[in-house]
Length: 393
Image (cartoon, rainbow, N blue to C red; front, side, top):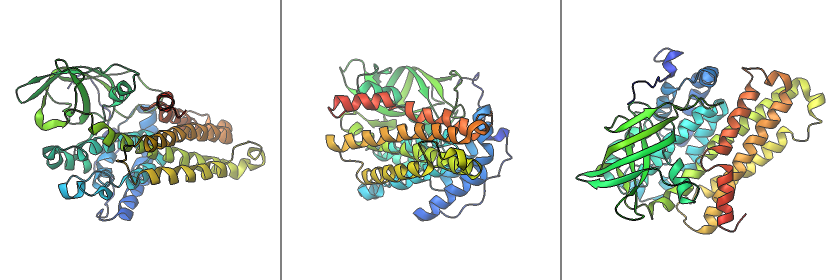
């Protein structure tokens, strides 16, 4: 890892061991109660430092893993993987929603972790499921998705940035990924690379940040989400062992993971919208006499959120449906979630007025964060392109 990268962690602002004692996550309700407790007790006090100082909430991320937040949708045992109802996307989305109500930056890191677990759980690599997979779902090891560039390349927006060649025991991969999040010295991330001597054949694998030939470099500061450890990754003949391969080739694998990859992002949007509704209602306690003249009210967003949740949770029941009709519904649901996040944050600012416009005001932070929901891959413009490509715009 590049020694020049300065990693800011939650240890800068809290003492070790602050995270509360959790209940054994033996059922869905307990998992969600644990996540809510962590979000309100341990995450909420850190929000301003995450936003203004770029602090990465590593202790919170690991605690969420112990609480069961990352394993509901990603069974790692062969028996569970053969039962499609073991992939509980709804609970994963609800857990992310609770985190997102307090901090979108952390909710995004949760999505990164969820996505990496999703990749492994849906692969045919039993070694990864037995070794790395359980460490990802428990939060012992953290990691990122690395699929921003590949997802864009699959829809003709960018060229694939990573190239590889077969070598004894695996592959050597070279190239640069400009934006990969939720990283650190012991973190892992997903990659897709094209084999240089094999035409269009593409391989997906998991890379180790501490691996030989892997270098993390600093990126520009963000206006929000700066506490997500988002870096550029340089790979220079980085060795990727066969045991780390998720799919070779990716042709059948990507359609299996794409709906879940996109649907899981709904948790970020739902948390954002819920927190914005709360801000509007709080402002209404003293400003209802004037806020009532604004065209969009908390109850409007509450009704819209309920409709979106119903659609997303229905889609989450069948994430392995590869039909065109199903995927169009997934795209439209994700597009609606991004649009609603921006609209809710915009209206939270209008309802709060000047009190939301100060540097530590929640409303202005929500507004900055909401745009991330609309630009993270797949961004609003990519989603609209995808619908146009499908003839469904």
